Amino acid sequence: MVQPTGSPPGDGLTLSTEISGASVVLRVSGVVDMLTASTLTRQVDALLDTAPSWLIIDLSDVTFLASAGLEALVIAQHRAGSTTELAVVADGPITRRPITLTAVDQSVRVYATEGEAREALDDR
Image (tube, rainbow, N blue to C red; front, side):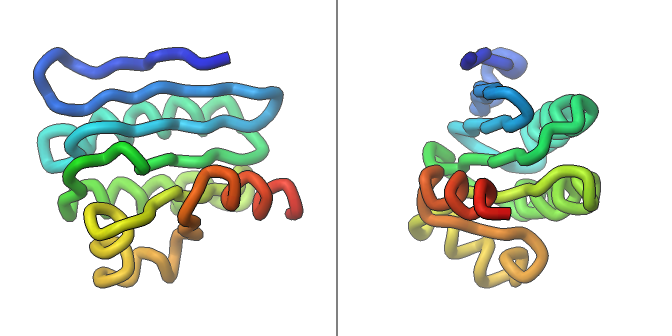
């Protein structure tokens, strides 16, 4: 089931959630910066409160990823702890490059596609 979770009008961020059993995909599109990262963090927190087996944060449609967005990913990994397996989908210069350059990929598992992330998490 896909649920648009929305965000405040005009903030440049759109979130939608797909829940399938005990697994969740959060699709993020638009701008993730200091104005919108808190919206992302609140949504991730709400999803983690449901204790899913795994959570994929798909950044495929993100058009700008600032340092606040990178921090939101690290916070998400920390909050997921050992309860929820977390993966991030990021490919290309807009998302993968800042994740790699800042070594966020050392603490958060990053995959090029949602399919790769699902396969990796299903194997755990």
